[in-house]
Image (cartoon, rainbow, N blue to C red; front, top):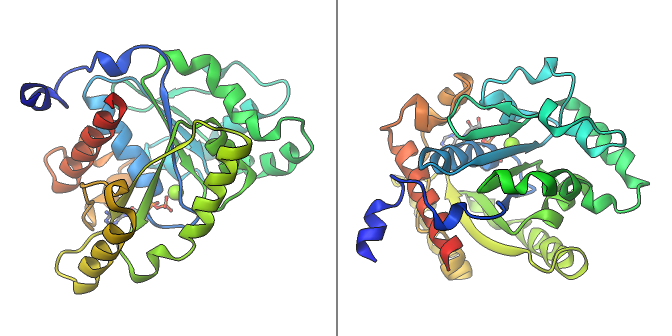
Length: 275
Ligand code: ADP
Ligand code: MG
């Protein structure tokens, strides 16, 4: 067991790379909590260990695409086109991320129209599933970066996900609104996707010098117990710096603390898949 533990992260993981990808939605209707940063860096950390990763930008702001250096404003085809009728081939939308083993389905502001167009469609909650199902066997992990609302797009992500990771900022009001998110997850589970699971909560922007950061951690641990990932992501300006550079922190500053933290999170997520 221990020997296997030591190997993890360094080698391609055969047990996790067979069959269809696990689909994970990074979800929290609060903005600025680290969804996009976690999608990029968790994805890059998984890809670094040899797993095949697809990131899906499901936020019309396109921050995921921008954070990977993709000039999303100029794109003519995006996730939006895949969700609609007469969708083009997915291969015309897929882009390589600059990180080996990691692809991206980019978005831009066009996606904001999808919500309105989907409303009148039959099976509107399963539009994203219809897009992703045919390519699930090409990847080991598909990570979906959700927008900061419990919109139809977010419901689409939950309806096709195996698991949800909730990034949560280490702030006093972090827990506010969380009940609404877990309610939504329960409804999706009952009505659309019985297989949906809460994988865990990852605390971001932790500052060990601040008493309140530590207090928030204690409270969240009391409430969520083993649903809280052991890995905590520290607050550091290197994250915004890396995204301006259009790279994950894991490649921009591979030895940085933040990069190591996302590698540790990736190992926890991989361990969950084995259970
Ligand atoms: P969300 O997708 O939930 O809106 P982001 O990942 O875009 O959140 O993060 C919001 C802002 O905070 C971005 O500018 C990002 O670079 C920055 N950020 C994210 N994680 C951290 C962190 N651990 N430390 C410092 N800044 C961070
Ligand atoms: Mg975001």
